Length: 362
Image 1 (cartoon, rainbow, N blue to C red):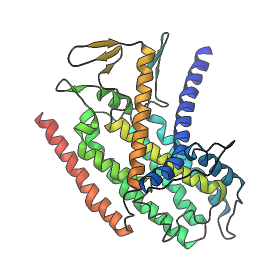
Image 2 (cartoon, helix red, strand yellow):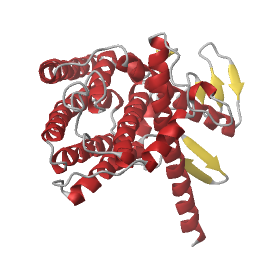
Image 3 (cartoon, rainbow, N blue to C red):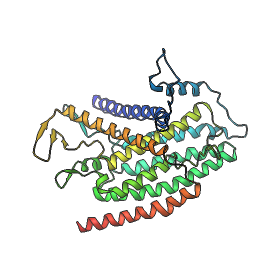
């Protein structure tokens, strides 16, 4: 019985760590989005909310937003479907959160005789699980558009569904090269394989082995998050979006789902193309440099460096996605569809063919 309790405790600790990581980073992105845009546009940025006279560069604004949404009136249209209208934001946020479950944030933590994989859920087909969860998340958006009894909301939901179809196909095709190179759909195994060295010195990260796949995946991933330049399901200057009838915390859940999806895309990009938790030349017992030097480290220090490396890579990718968000203008609906079906998909198939040819040749 004690062994079962220990396993449950370990599983709960890993899930709690991931949920705190994703939710806190997603909440922080609401501040990053404003502050980064202010810096890029030579403005002061968010700095009004204060606690005990302290502003701290606007870091209290996410807390002020949460208080505002929790105390705001929860409005519902008279002709709305009451059940689906209430469920839609929960569906959207839930599937965005659980998509992070199979992304490893470290290798193995040894505690006594027990080895604990630093991954909430270990699956041999972890990649398929992630894309299934991201695909299901769009149901919340579609339900919100239909249940609101608003033509503009319905149009936003239909746009989101069309965008998700084109983006998911491009995402699936763009990562086929990665699975061919590393020979697995298990994200933990893919991360471990990226610890190998090419030519004795270059880390075998997906970025170096699949540069075209990285660009294609990142483009399709941004589209999957429904953020600029692919935010036409919202289109504030056109149709307001699928959440036009939502207010209060339900509106906040839709916004949080967008930020969590950004974190998920950053996590997948890190796991597939940036080495995951790998630190260059860091082995299980310390640093082993190509020129023969060794720096031994205790196991706990190695694990801490791995978790820190994963966290930093995800944070940098989130910053880069925000950089794109404030740099590129919005695509028109037809331009985004053309890019997905006539640009990303053919290039992804070409990447698969080229990868297969190189693998057979090597």
